[in-house]
Length: 175
Image (cartoon, rainbow, N blue to C red; front, top):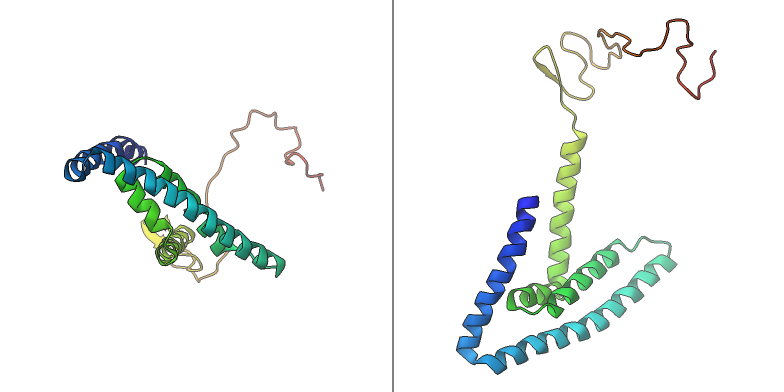
């Protein structure tokens, strides 16, 4: 994750500089700067109009007792879009403008939901290995019936308490 962040912090400005040079060479300096200012103004206007509409939809859902999950995601995307459009650059402007398109946000939301669902399923499917054999949840130990709740093992007390102390955990009264 750290390497991706470093690559983004170095790569994005380099791409933006390259795009400024190429577009500036094609349409000229002043039209390039005007285009950057125009995208910032459009982003500000879109953030205001779409942000207020998203807020109103979220309030309506809350009033009905529903969780406004879609509106929260849309609001997050709109804030990111506004920040990207206020950042000088053509690549960030393109990403920001894409985030203002409701269809793109829906596609992004569904894609992220699928990834989160897959990650959750993978995380909840525990794999335990006993004597070189894999045990899945509910399978039981190899050679025994499924659902057997006996767990065999060895243990030793590694605490430095004297043997005459009560072994009851703190906060639980002795029986």
